[in-house]
Image (cartoon, rainbow, N blue to C red):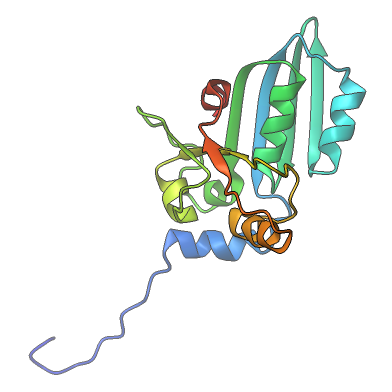
Length: 181
């Protein structure tokens, strides 16, 4: 065929990640988060109120001292934070339903967990690929604690406007943050 000069059209196959991106546009809540909590600190109604604004398909079942929570959300980190605050987490699972639907693995098992502070500047794809968890860095402003701004640069500009000349001090996140991640 090659010698005869015939041109063959090659079918361009879509990459799985492109399929995920297209599917996500129709999926209202991408992530499924499921947890099992022992000795909940709050009643079911209180936990439901906190979670219902973060997603849908919210199911909760309590038997004895254990509470199982299931929710579909686009904010899995916020949901997991509420679940951790609710009591002792026996198990916690997050699945990417969009990846699952197109045949990619939604939950990958890794032998080593990597945790870093939010001051890192890793692309989202890298965080997802290597399942890197993020914990909050603690910033302490010597003169003023509550400066408006979403990031350190905005807060530093605000500090300069207010005449605050000292820079913030950072400290490592508390060890509990690393355990929870």
